Length: 233
Ligand SMILES: C[S@@+](CC[C@H](N)C(=O)[O-])C[C@H]1O[C@@H](n2cnc3c(N)ncnc32)[C@H](O)[C@@H]1O
Image (cartoon, rainbow, N blue to C red; front, side):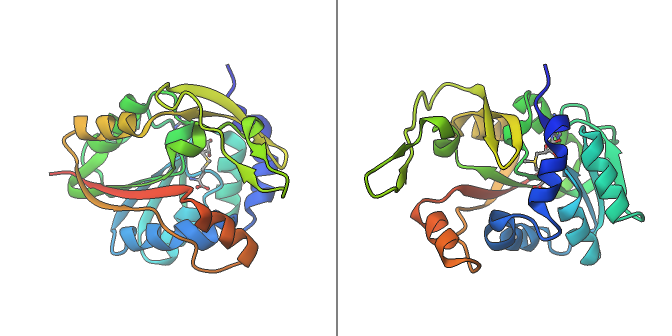
């Protein structure tokens, strides 16, 4: 079954532009780049159209991006012809053990069907002392499907969290994009990471630090994302 990424690629590329969407530009890039500072060799798992790899390469990190969606990879290569962008899936990484000092999952765990298999692969290709750097949607959000959100009389949107403990795939859509995302409770992510013997070195629910004030207020109301760094012994 398709996950919607091939069909949504053009709308995704348009939506991201060169700088990324609000959340990337004003919430997530800054902490994600800080966690990748000084990396020599990084793997961006689910690199999409390559934006974060380009940011890393501009900072001197040799970044490789993998992604299963051909149209996104084509854009990544067109925007960065010297870059290294390859077809691949998180669940079967085509790299030797201990190849990277950072492995990055930037809002991709929600897209990956086999979480435990993917995390095992990400841990395998990390060198000892290296870190798996993750940005993820907070599970209370993925448990509140957009079509079930409630608007009150003032127009304010409220989340209706439902079946939080039940992992499941659900279709979500916005601005011409329609993809299948996974909801999983936080404990499933933590269990998959702990199972690999990784150690949690950093955890944050980053606040917006600029951009359109209305958007920032929305992201301050509740943390949409968390950022983590897990180290391999
Ligand atoms: C929400 S996008 C994030 C893209 C990019 N990391 C970013 O933050 O802009 C999710 C990406 O995961 C990719 N993806 C879907 N299934 C995947 C899998 N099994 N393994 C790796 N990447 C996958 C999609 O093609 C898409 O590029």
